[in-house]
Amino acid sequence: MILNHITENLTNNSLYYYRGRVALFALLRALEVGPGDHVALQAFTCIAVPEAIIAVGALPLYIDIVKGGYNMDAKDLSDKLTPHTRAIVVQHTYGIPADMDEIMLVAAAHGIPIIEDCCHTLATTYNGRLVGSFGIGSFYSFEWGKPLVAGIGGCLHVNDPQLLEKARLNHSKYSVPGLLAQAKIKLQYSAFELLYRPIWYWPIRSIFRFTEEIGLVENSYNPVGRGSVAKDFNLRMVPSVQRRMLRKLQTMEIQARHNRWVTDQYCNKLLPYNIPPPVIPEGSETVFARYPILVKKKTDILSKARHAFVELAAWYATPVHPLTDNDFALVHYKEGSCPNAEICCQHVLTLPVHSKVDQHDINRTVRFISRVCQ
Ligand SMILES: *Cc1c(COP(=O)(O)O)cnc(C)c1O
Image 1 (spheres, rainbow, N blue to C red):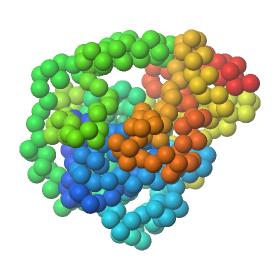
Image 2: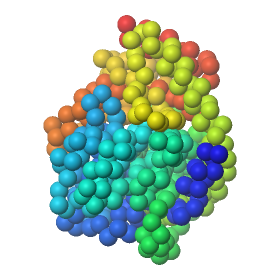
Image 3: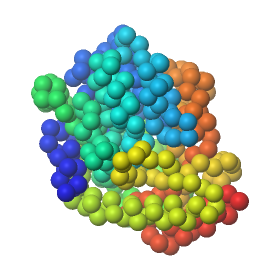
């Protein structure tokens, strides 16, 4: 039954774009958010989110995450909202739902619409309802590292009929990516399907970075705030990605079961080593995109993981990943403005839960973590 709801989120009242960030951009445009407006979002996110906000001409307003958690703090949201705030982007980080009850109260008190960033989750429920159905709209991403990998693509789901009509009208003017971009995405996807296993994570990551640099594959990050809006923002989803996404959608229930099988083991097997599971809001069934743990020596553990061929990801390594220091100004983030997010970046590591993780990988990962975290 959950599959029906997921399918509904991704096919009913939905529009397909080149990437997740383009879907967010399209929704902000339909909401007529522009210059002089603020859009709230959490720090501890990736650059794609402020990129879309800046692309419509608005200013990102960074909200801290809850202490010891990964999602937006409703209290900080309430403190920081300005009279110019026109939308609140609520991210369900790693698939863990944000505290929607509290956040919706704050949003309703100010009459500001909520947009859900569902890039990390398709199947998580909160109070018995699927995430993506709480806000005025939600957006999804299908690139590698997300719960459903189909190449590069994004989906926008709109819960308001008038807004949907407006977005649909704009969407009809969007163009299909060129044949070269389509070929690159196909190559990228085939390589991913064929080669990627947890044990090959680090070598493949190095190769991917290299092919990105020489322009063989599409970059994950665009240069932001350097005067031009990336060309991506007027593109639709590649048709072959759309077909693959719809086909793989049918396997989401099996994948959700697999994710639970993996995360239950991480949870039970890491507890004896004083690594507690992440805090989940009451009344939520969480399907993780990755399983986060907090460690003392993050950098040290990452370099050991690389040598031991254990898949561990660092994201988010900075409050607006992957920007650092001087580059924060490009996305209007002020260092020190979100202390919980900044501390979290220094300690978080995430373990894989995707369909290629088998029993052997789980055992290796747990053994590795227990060894390096002693
Ligand atoms: C990946 C991601 C995005 C952007 O998705 P793209 O398809 O790369 O544009 C936005 N928000 C979050 C939380 C993401 O993980």
